[in-house]
Length: 399
Image (cartoon, rainbow, N blue to C red; front, side):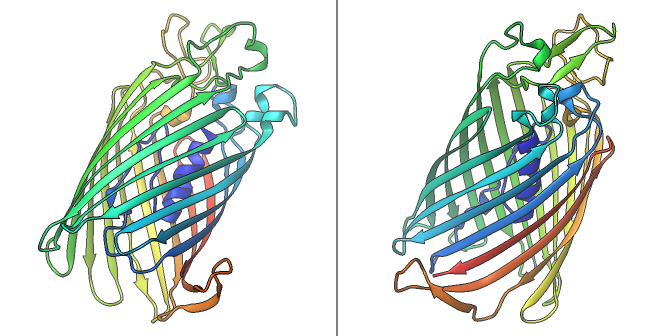
């Protein structure tokens, strides 16, 4: 969960999608480039994330949630010709976690820090009838799990160019190393060490006029297998029983999203977003966000943003020593609790009009041209007491 929470915040900082247990997978096919690609591009991303709180699920809903994470990622989109593009991305996350250090109940255990490595390769092709399709395969791994990912998408632009349609799908095949809390290793608490996640996303984007654009998305997400976390403890109301977290082996998520962009003038753009989320674990959620990019001059723009999220608790959630021993399923993970959260910050973008030529691309005859630099800061708080900060930095080149 620590990496999933971090990934959700990082992805919000670079404008791509990810998923977490408490918030459904959000995949918008507008993330795929459907405009004509004329140049290959290279993106380099760095980020630092830190959080703290006092509701760690590792120790049953109490205890430190302190975590720091450093990430680095490279994305390359290589244009083969006017119709074909190959994409390659990869990177790593290095984290230290005071929470997972408590799996073994002594300081500086092997679970205190780890490195997650990930990579993907994709292929896309454009046809002559405004149709684009692509596939991607990849994977990731760290000390307690390994994951394979398969995805594909198809998108089409109407003859007028004002409407675009998209359909995408993803599948994750995960396998866990079943590491239980130290004092609970006398038995096997899980029936499987695998998890399967499947998602389908449909989208439509419509240009209403020269100033307004709207987008609609609908997702269907199905997860099966090991949906609990093996090293999360749960303490019961008899004040003596402790068990490993137990959750159903199936979860269905359905989020619906609405996006609205409004061009005010040459200096200001309004980007608004709303999402409703439902799952069969009892969570209903609403998310709304607003971003206001402001152009300072020909080169610089600043974009303050705010995001609000509220959700009901899962049917299986209760706090420390609040569960009944007769319960079939139980968790004290506050990602599944009733909560409100606020995420706000700002970004600064530098975009030289003609770009800045830097150096040759890996010894080839092509020159790297710096097209954009982004710096972003975000602060996140939620009603359970968790607070975090993230600083991200990115550069985009063409070649």
